Amino acid sequence: MYMLKCCFKRKRKKTLQDLITEQRKWLAATKEGSTNQESREREFTEHLARLILRQRRNHRRVKLFTFVGSCLVVLGFTAGVLGYLELDKEQISLERLAAFGSYLQGAVTSLWSLAALLFIYVAYLGQKQQFFQQDVQLAYQREQFAIQQDSITSQNFESSFFQLLTLHHEIVSQVLVKDSGIEYRGEGCFEQLHRILMRDYMGGHLTNLQLATREQVAEVYLHFYEHYRGPLGHYFRTLYHIFKFVHGGNIAEKKRYSSLARAQLSQYELALLCYHGITPIPPETTNNFKKLIVEFELLDNLDEGLLRNGHSYKALYLEPSEAKAKGTP
Image (cartoon, rainbow, N blue to C red; front, top):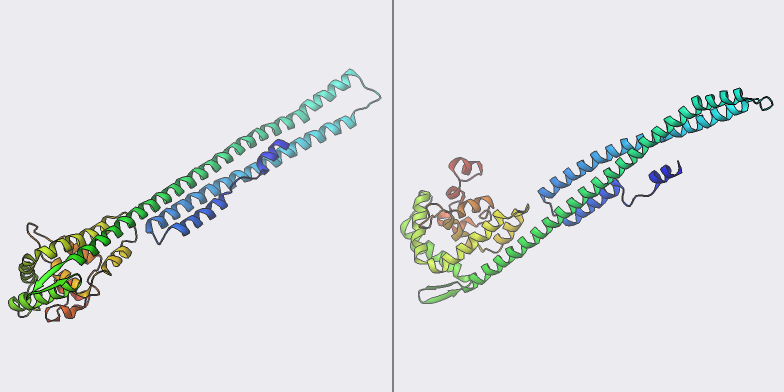
């Protein structure tokens, strides 16, 4: 009895409630609104809740059968004492001792045998409790390992992402454009490129962009791009791979990183990007950048006054029904 009580009353290293509390603290410290982590946290908590219910049911059985077994031991001892008290000490004979022995065998031994059977079952339940605890510990360790892997993945992604942004800044600083004998370098050249596009290409080929089709606009921009392929080609390829990297990243907060990348672009860069996104650059037949522009809403903050005739970019990117639903004139 004493050993059994010690077995079930000894203090465990970590209770199930402690594990749940630690798990929530860990997730709160490591996650940043991640949908995958929230889903995993919910699944892990539900799994722990099921284990808690099973352990509680098992613990109630342990207490019940321990109590019943203890009662049987006490009853057996009481029955033996009562039988001994009824024994006439002055007229002890072999027949009376045999009868007393039969009484003990029938009353006491049967009760204690049943109690021993219950205690064996209690010992089995105790082993089962340990298995439950091991299952929880393993689940907890797996969850921590998964979170650590997510943290490493996120750190690797961020490192690569900011390296790409650094490369983008270096490319922007090295862009060089000449117009009317004047050199423009760095961010300032995009303003000049936009001015050249509006003045020499859009103005010369399209008198009313609002009436022009998407294909006509793309054809005009392609002439402009072919003439300035040197500074624009490297720039847009790097920019495309930044957003492609975010799109293919195994992270939840893609919008956050795409917003960081978009914040690096000036209004003139966004205006050029608007026309570049709808233009297939040979030998391609479609521009894959367009999907990323729409997905990450890169042009939502574009000053549409920088487009020819103040036309909304949504008409160039969205189908008529979608453009109408978003309030495009």
